[in-house]
Image 1 (cartoon, rainbow, N blue to C red):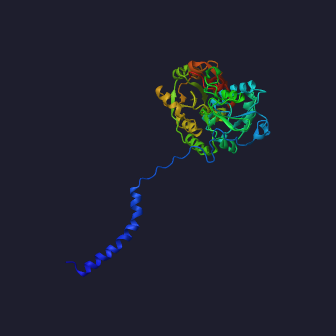
Image 2: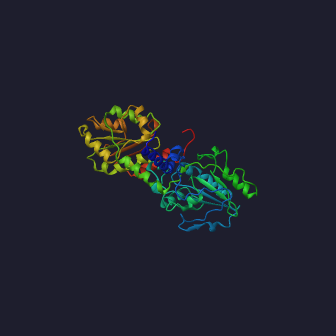
Image 3: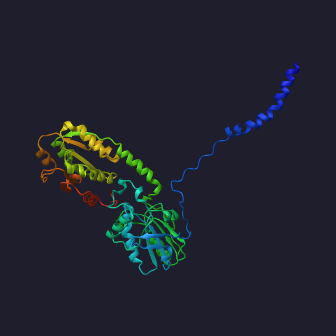
Length: 414
């Protein structure tokens, strides 16, 4: 039999049990209920608005390369308005410029107005994203680019605030939006289906088809397509640029010795890469002064088939000093090049010439080299000379010559 004290304890425990269950119930339910999956974070910045067919055109108040303010109302007389988000740097955007100019010319006097807007923050582009362009996406550079390419349409700048790009939902350059007389969205997406400059590669001129249909009072055959090109360079991406710069600043450099025979093999350039050779020394003032321009050139073309090969005339015993100089100036090998260097059996692109005769180096690299350093030589695949210069280089001239050879667009088959 239970003692009186045992009965008393049992009764007390039974009275306490509901209280304990009430306290523990939320925790028990939480443990049994599966956690709801978190909604993936949007890759677009805050304020980004995805437009739908039938939506009204968002207003804008932007400065054009004519230094005038442009608003939506300025184009109220047009039967159709095409807003084309373009940029200076993007090869796809550059490739469609000619077709947009032809569109403007072909529909002149027929009710169509075309307005181009640059949505990009120039500070949100890595140097290697400029490898297809002479210019960044800044407002002054927009003027230069538009003048050189003879734009026949307004070109407006939105990179300071990006309010217009956010309101329209600009995903890339190019990204096209076509509005009817009431300024309702009737088409959005790509200009056409080709990323190449050659109009013969276009098989679906979607924007042109939409314009023709709207002018004839017919439904747009395909109202939405996916834009293709370079992603919009949002202001909030500046942090990633800082991280990329930090990577370059902390990079290490491999330095090897090389003889004339080794230089001659590199000079033949049996690769698909454009090679920039620079002969220099730590004790050469012009060499030191020009070196940042060489590194800037390597970074600009870092995503293309391009490499900077430096040949130091320092004493091979000074290898540590040469390496320190190269690392100080961030003369590292871009990630894109590393597989090709490994395949060629090379550790890097920095060398010290280890023969006594400079003449042997001249004959191996460039027979037209007069002798002094610095000396720069740019060769195409199979060794064709693109550019040579003795003395301190002009970085802009150097990069322009390289870009002229490599081109501003994607080319079919390459």
